[in-house]
Figure 1 (cartoon, each protein chain N blue to C red):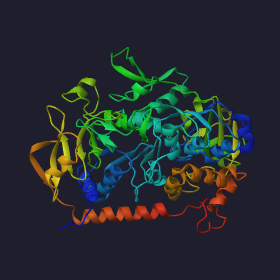
Figure 2 (cartoon, chains in turn green, brown):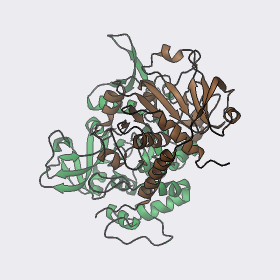
Figure 3 (cartoon, each protein chain N blue to C red):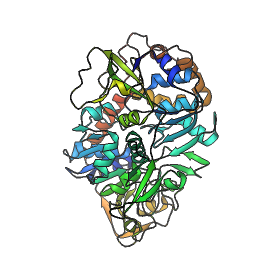
Figure 4 (spheres, one colour):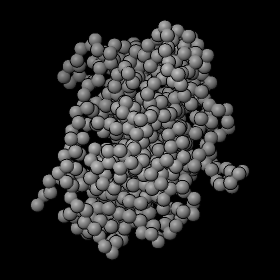
Length: 292
Length: 262
């Protein structure tokens, strides 16, 4: 494990063309890392994530992705991800290949990757059209009962990126709250980059807590607020008002680009991003009419 | 006379009433979540709500906007990893009712939440299946809630995201799905259930002031009507009060600005 700044971590570990999983199921979504990847202009990525969420809407709209493996691509509780839709429907800003699963199927893929198995299996995809459009979904006959069981190939990302509450100085990482498939995505990956809310002297993890030991972590970067507008349990809440506002910001290509220019490309780091939106505790309220 | 509740409220109340106390319900976001939480606040205080984010036995005070809002975790009996929720809890056979919404439904209760138009060149790319395919096959039974109109109640789905009764006539049972499939569909016009022999959805109940014809005209296939059509009792003052309070708290919570403490 190496402790480094987020720009250094992205420079060293995120490469054009990689298969990149940035996990976190609604909770602990690594937005700061995604914004740094966009700022550094990474491209041709195969993005992997159960729920693309706003994080991949932004990366897809910014032109970072050549492919997307996913299982639910909406703005949760709000509606469409307009940048994902535009890429699929109108091929803007570039065509995107989509590899579509169900949640249970993707969970089985990550688990298989983490377990060094060639495939995962589940009672899944029964009677659906998903196997028709995703050739990866197949089946095996159970050698014990003769039943047909669905299979999905193991997911082995080149790099998984997570956000977590804290790490100690040895890079041991503690995650708390809704976990999604973060541990599986971490253990399935060749390299693991974690951003954290804070670095502490002692992790003080409860027994049986979800801890990723420093020796399975490639790099740790301390980025307070790094999950915003998603959330970090115990630190700050999900900004549901922002998720509602994203519907308007992202609907139109120009509005989206202006917002990205103002709040992602035009700022040096995540602290400045939070300030630009007026959500950092120390910053001013945005003025009337100002992009938020 | 205009009734003192909206068709959406009637739909949510009718759906909530079908859930029972101590029932284990795997809840989809949106309309199912509103109905399940109304049930918990009204007549089923010990209903066990499971969201796919891994929250088991959660008791949120406001409706979550996302399936993984922090309040779901804070008020849950247990928070488990997502692979576990699908493997041990859903596939393991612990779920009584899978409660789903959809963009489209056909006469056999098959659901589409993936695309309108051709998959490769869609007219509208919808969010996709998420947890629904395995909820639809593995839950003991499935409830579906969606508004009824010719765009949502279609003779042919553009994409089958989740299986109901497939082509009907026992096809689902022959496929070997563990659960019994969609046993009830609640809409803003009435309630449909599958016929025992054909598996085809029939209108079995309507709401007060909503004639059967309206449901027929809102359906994109020739809708079959049960021999006896019940009239669903209108919402009680308590039900409407609880539901509106829930929505009011939710609106207030979701519009609150978040501060990141840095």
